[in-house]
Image (cartoon, rainbow, N blue to C red):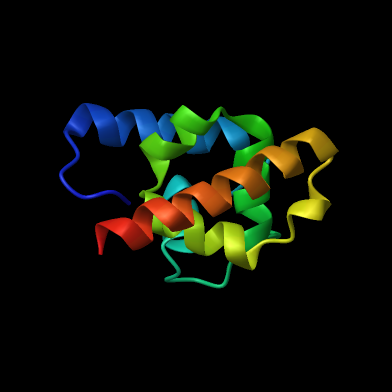
Amino acid sequence: MKGEQTPNDQQEIKKLLSNLVWDYNISVEDLQDLIEGRRKRAGHYTREHFFLKLLESYSWFTILKILPPAQILDLLERSNLNKLKRKSLAKKYEYIQKRLQQALSASN
């Protein structure tokens, strides 16, 4: 996931991911591989589908703990935000996508 994580950070991320799939037989390692693009599926989740679950389940700041901004932007661009259950959440992340794109472009 993100670089330079402490063991406590890694444990917190594993717990956050595990909490999302407590009712499925999907390992945290498979989810991490899925998010990082090393596998196509983890259980019934695709990378984009699991990312939408992250957006629906956790706050923006929690998602930033799990994924680096560049990876979030990539997933925001690939994911169909209209599939989010709450339309207000889709609008929020469309706005974040634009701002994140500007911020990452300015830093390059």
